[in-house]
Image (cartoon, rainbow, N blue to C red; front, top):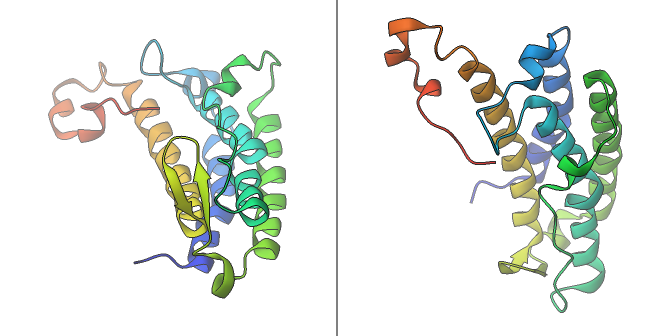
Length: 178
């Protein structure tokens, strides 16, 4: 197994700054493009990441630590952010994400004692028994998945403009999942 909580936190801490730097100064064309109907733009991905910080990672961790594996923890609505009708600038969304993520990392550090808690289990509403270290590992992989998604969506904005070089640009060939 490769899991190391300190290394996991390294990625979790960097995600907001990475995205903030990447989005800084970009036009709405980059932030609002998507891969077609039913896919997400960079702005929508940030909304999803914010929603996850509010209702997924730490609430599920707290549930496992408090309740154990008895009752399943509440399901996470992966699409809840799409119902948020409040218009925000990317800077506002990024500040919200950065603020909540910082708070959540502090909670993670306080809640989890690696020698005691990583193997504790909870009950996922779909997957059944899951471990604390699996939840944290998934949080990291989730961040990296959405960073890759954002880059892919933005690259595909120019898929019809690159001409014959498309043959060499693997990022333009596949449509990923949300």
